[in-house]
Structures are given as C-alpha cells and as structure tokens.
Image 1 (cartoon, rainbow, N blue to C red):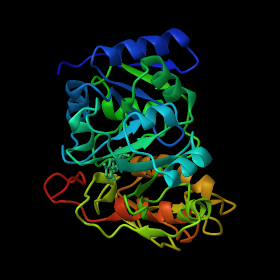
Image 2: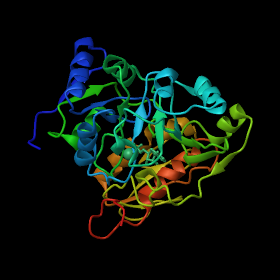
Image 3: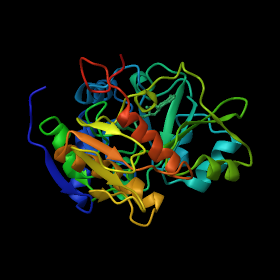
Length: 326
Ligand code: AMP
Ligand code: MG
C-alpha cells in the first residue's frame, strides 16, 4: 500500500462526511470519532475493504470486528434479535454497548468481519461523526479501534494520525472522546444466556438490572480476540499496578488521594478516569520508561479500567513487543 497524506476534517463539515462515505463506497478506509474510541471504518459488506482494516492495523485475521449500525432496524437486517436483545438495545442504544448475536444467513456482511464465526457483533454509536457516516453510506460499517494492533486505543484525531499516518486518507475529527474506553461487549445466545465478553462504561450490573437476569462471566476460551488477549493496549514503557508511591524513574499516574505526575481523576470519579485513561498512558509513555498506576477500585466503571490497565501491564511476547498473540 503506497503511503498517502492523511487529512483531518471536522465531523461538522457535511461535505467531508459525504466524501468519507464515497471513500468507503469505493472500498477504502477512513477513521471516525465515536463516543468510545476512534474507529477505523470500512463498508462491512465489502470483503476487500474489510481485509484492508486487518492489513492497516496489523490485526490477526482470526479476530472479529464490530459492525456499526445506525439503528435497531439496520442491526435486525444482519443478526437475529431476540426479546432480551431488543429490550437492551432500546434502553442503551445509541451508545457504548455491543451485542454478539447469531448472524442471519445468507448475509451481505463480508465473512472476514466475523472471522468465520456464526455470530456478528453489532453496535449503534451515538457520536454524530460515526452515526452520520453510517447513515450516509446506508450500510453497516465494520470498525475496530483506529490504532496499530496491540497498541493503545486512540481517543483523539491526533492519536489516530500518530498511529496510522499515511495509511488512511481521512480522519473525521469529533474531538476528545467522551467515554475514553471501548464499548461493553455482551453475547446473548439461543438459550437467552447473557455473557460479558468485555467490560466497559455500561456496567454488567446496569445490564443485569435492565434485563432482569444475571450476566455471566465469559469463560469460553474458544472465543479469542484482541480485547480478550492478556497483553493488549501496550505502551512502550513497563507498567506497575496498584502503586501508592512513586519509585525511581517512574511516571506515576494517580487517582483520587494518590497524587501522581498526572491524575486520572482528582475526585476519584471513575467515568472521568476512564475518559483520561489512554490519553494519560500515552503522555506517561512519552515521559518515562516505567509507568506506575495507582489502585483503581473494582466497582462500576473501575472494572473496565482495571481490565484495560491489567492488559497494558501484561508481559508481552518477546519478539514483537506489540501485544500480538503468541
Ligand atoms: P475492537 O474492535 O478492537 O474494539 O475489538 C472488537 C472486539 O469485539 C473483539 O476483540 C472481540 O472481543 C469482539 N467481537 C467481535 N465480534 C465478535 C464475535 N462474533 N464473537 C465474539 N466476540 C466478538
Ligand atoms: Mg482495539
């Protein structure tokens, strides 16, 4: 792939959304803001375009992508939605909740999107950048986070450019993302069992309450994907967790009472900590070779934050140092 100039345009620029849609229509990629992290978008019905996502990210091809839809009806055209899923979609969409559901057959969705699985992950984003892009294309958009595989997820247009400069034509800028971490992912199977595949800002407790049933942990190791690998979101620096005091050479990321070189949230607000998380690790990574992070309580959004920092701190495969599967 020859390198090109990556242009950043505002999501408020209507002709830019039309241009982005035309790029997708032609089978190429653009990045766009969502309320979680920036996504690397392709027309989900175009197999060649979807393969470009894997190539540009360096993502292992057995790791499925999320299909972004503009509403429940577009989701219904690609997956089977039972009563529980419908109820949860009505409650949490548009928003940061992804559903892994049985795919309709035959399907227009490229097989590479779900890496050959009989399910498809669907999400309806709220941010107008991605939402308007889906409406303009009028088809589902496959989009993982817009970063090289295994690296920190991008929460600003600048983060996207620093990882994918020259590899994509356009980034639709929607400012710093509101939520800062990727969507919550649940699966709902034919027995109506709900499993939490990835924690996010919508918590398992909130979903359980809305569904009126318990949410199981995912103990099915057959479903492997980047978000579920032990090492992911890897900065260059080593990370030490549960740090209360800064050691020599470390950059301390604080939380609440534990004041660091920078704090995720002075007032111990977990939503604010999630919003600042990847950005703060990026800054720390530029400043030091060792990063220490203060303890984050394992409650509410804290569960998702701990999931991300644990993966960022996990030992990396020695050769690539990139958090790729061994
Ligand atoms: P990312 O696009 O980087 O946020 O990662 C998307 C995540 O969605 C993957 O890491 C998987 O955990 C999950 N996912 C997508 N499709 C499926 C599927 N069909 N079954 C299970 N998990 C999925
Ligand atoms: Mg990702």
